Picture 1 (cartoon, rainbow, N blue to C red):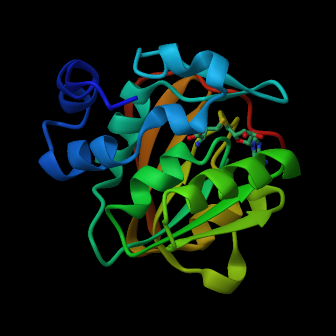
Picture 2: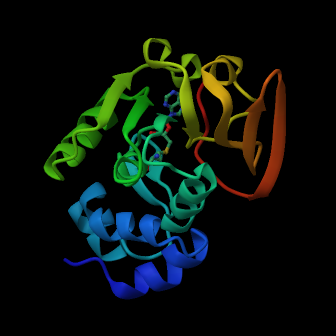
Length: 200
Ligand code: SAH
């Protein structure tokens, strides 16, 4: 199965601000690799799909949007909370230098790391843990992305963000961009969104 042109044109490009580098990452990372074979036919529709354990791979439009909001730079070190299928981590791996991703469900971690290995990606590191504590050994991060819906802004994650760093996080149904500047935290609401719950 090839990545369809219409998926890039109608779903990805309009949601990533027509950023060609980001769109290129979606061409190189086939979304059907990250779902069960029975769901391959649905992989290039703008739908969240089940990945087991009550979790989902996010809609491609929201992955494109969150990736674009992170404003990925080639030298960035990024922390993702909520590995899930590994798709978002794989997309980021094509755009930045290092990706660290944390998942609390070990079976999902296993499948995600296999998917990523099959694509010969070697700049993603995985950890099984509660993501609310971040990944201290590798902090601080240029950017942090949380792909499960939180009830608040986790303190530890703010702490592990570099000065002038950015965090993209859904809080109570609203997608937010958080920017850390010296000792202040700027919070911008982007749009409504729907995610599986962040388990604390
Ligand atoms: N980024 C994923 C989307 C996964 S859905 C993808 O591209 O497929 C959100 C994931 O967050 C789920 O796998 C869920 O198990 C995980 N999650 C929820 N709460 C968490 C927590 N506190 N720590 C780590 N992972 C968490």
